[in-house]
Image 1 (spheres, rainbow, N blue to C red):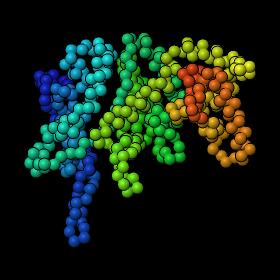
Image 2: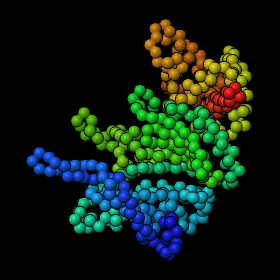
Image 3: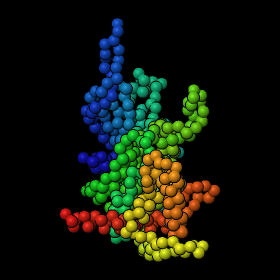
Image 4: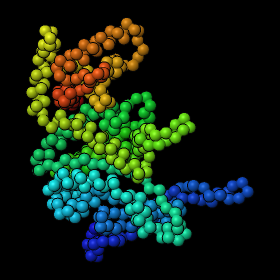
Length: 424
């Protein structure tokens, strides 16, 4: 029976709702033989784990899991949307919820301010308070001891609410199609603020799945991922999930060359760094949505495409039109739309490596390719698809460039797919 139904049946509005016991695999200890005497060794065991479900006045329905064998680890699972709902109730701000998302809030600005307070709560104190409830040994044999609290899984969602399902449904189909066909490995790494190079050792996967509640797309980089889905056709959600924070950096004190210095070191799971989790995830969601922004207004993109497919004149010199059917133009578009380049910009040298490979070449051949690429960059610049970064040798893709190049690539992929399906 669902926990909320148990609470309603028993008239529970606050406090403990139910406790469930489950035998699960867990890390514990065993007595191992040693030299001269036995010793304790860390090992995987099966033991009973207890799940305590509470209706909390601040966080709504939460559950706390405690392992009944040493070392008695405790896990707390809660939902920030439920916490925000209770804060809105306190301030008498009207809203409408769809599952665990908000389809309407009467004061969105105040809701954003309240949501920003979530990470500023006294998390060590709150979590320790729940641990005392489920582990009585903290008041007896383990008196004076405590837990080191970490974020085992961190989910950060950015929701876009729509007024009706007719507005979101057709757009969502286009967004899914665009994300599946256009976002490659380098793009996914770029959304997460990383570069895809030889140092990356892991798996990058994008998959599209149908669930009972609808269709979702997930881009996974090792144990971290970005996913997009809709909530009952009214809310578009982009969500970054961090399971392995060590892939990211945080500015903190650490050891370098044997000395303690302040610098950028791997992000660890301690709840003291929740603010950094939020910064990383918020930036990832923003990059993802910005990359999808070209899909929102196809009419504007069509106008820009018609303009790009005409010859241009600049300072008395003519420049050819964009040719959507030319393989070279499509290769150039894909190269400048690579994830890392979109975020940080790109140089002539980097573009040469993407277009022609990182193979060693003679100086003469390198000069030839750089000259050809310089002409390509000038051509893209004249059409307004890229812009020069001030006081640097880097280039950035413009909003017009995003709209034109991604739309042309998407149209080619669709046409190619349809022709291939007809051929088989």
